[in-house]
Length: 203
Image 1 (spheres, one colour):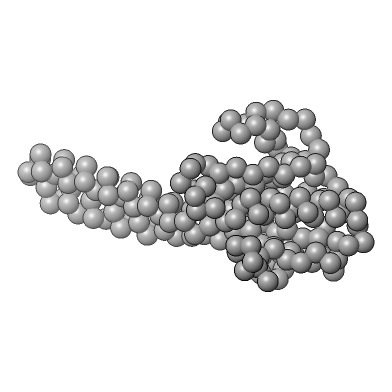
Image 2 (tube, helix red, strand yellow):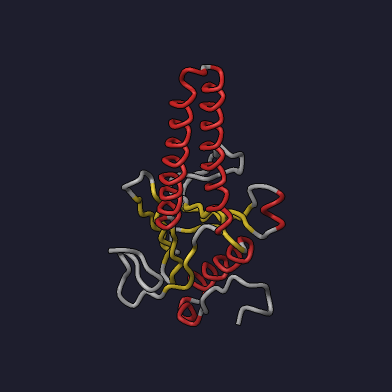
């Protein structure tokens, strides 16, 4: 079954989707730019080699063109497929993250709100911070240790959402769900879906 806007693999009966998290389109654009840059660099190297070996210049030119189009076409397909499968669902019961690990495999990770202890948000850099794009880490009830990025405490049981638009607002929204779920469970059904817009424009 494919994950859609209204359903996902493993969705429980009467489970209500509050928000669907996808990487911001700029993350896709950045991935495409990297692929195209690699294609151009390889093609230029082959053309330079062809200019140095005049007897094989035609062969190197053909190879450069073929490799350029192969890398661009295959890279574009892979990037779009990868981003399409990279999706998370925030529901009234839990958070479910589908994360592609290979070209053909996608891992599903789930944390119920009972298992979540806190939420952390941070931008990967200042530029993305200005565009309100960042990461959201949902921490499970496990011991902490520093991660490779130096952002502290991302463990195997935690769920990290990357390239999230309005990441701070989403972090606050998840905090609201946690408080309601644990302190006022009867009011969970009244929580409205998250809208990724500026305050005053959400409803």
